[in-house]
Length: 430
Image: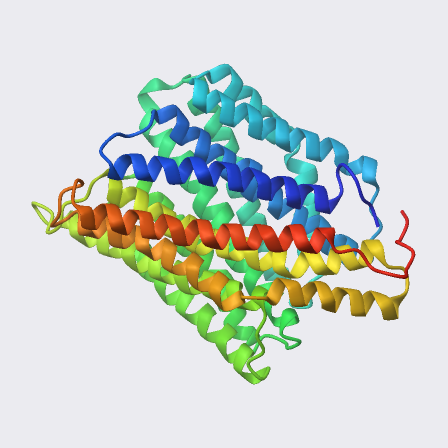
């Protein structure tokens, strides 16, 4: 098993560090909006690019490399050092360029991502192919997600270079939603459907329904992307309806799988199931926003704070839940495989690490979930209350406190798991 710079563990821990730092910036940004003194726009974009590239994409890459190693495929440490360095240089360039409003740095960061796209995509697909439920349709589905990522990178470079100023608005919408919808959302939902049944030691309850989900999800996401680019609320609502139905089918299928498995529980499965549930809520909220826009004037006012709350329901409620679930499973398995040579002792060591990850899991899931939904509550309060209202400020502080509590608790678990070494056993060597 490979360790050190470029190992799966280095991707996971560095990605989590990026996510923590940028989350603090994001929470400060939200608090600034509530207090009526917004932070500089560059800082907000630093938060976005740092969290998505340095945090989310880096941890997705780390989880993919971990899956490859755990499946028994040999990897070379040197092979992934370039990927690790390139990914973090890309994150630094995009984050610093966004903060300083320097297009040259943003372009350089984007070019680093383009340069490492092929090895990154190849490892992601190789990891997904280790799942028992992989089919030819899965290959097509994840091919679409990776095409979304590549398209988002190309559009981002065109946007940063300002080569087509008259197309700025369309390029921005395409860059944003191709990355978030076609890549991040589809890839995460598809991975949860592939990975959750093996975690439950079951096959997917209805394979046919699972294939239907893989067909409908890209159609709904592509329709939503088209609606955003064309500024057509009606297309957005139709596509959103398709996504709502598809997510309901996916969740129902996984719930039945979980039920027939005897309703086992762990930190990993709790977070993954909660992620899908909150994505379903986010999609419903998005449809409500679209319906509201159709009214003239809108039935409810919709401003910056509402947009921030909605987007973070997606990121915190869905993506962060999924990442925490993935790390809760991957870290104990990866560390046990790296540190213990004896299979018998490896199992005992891994079970000990899993017990650490499963501690206080109900508190961890609930604080992250309610803290996320609290952002929506704070935004909705501003329909009837001014930003200066103590109710709005109290709600904001309570929501941020819940989110920070969950992040702190999970970070402490990561530190404890990484710092817990096996006793009386020689560590595994490369």
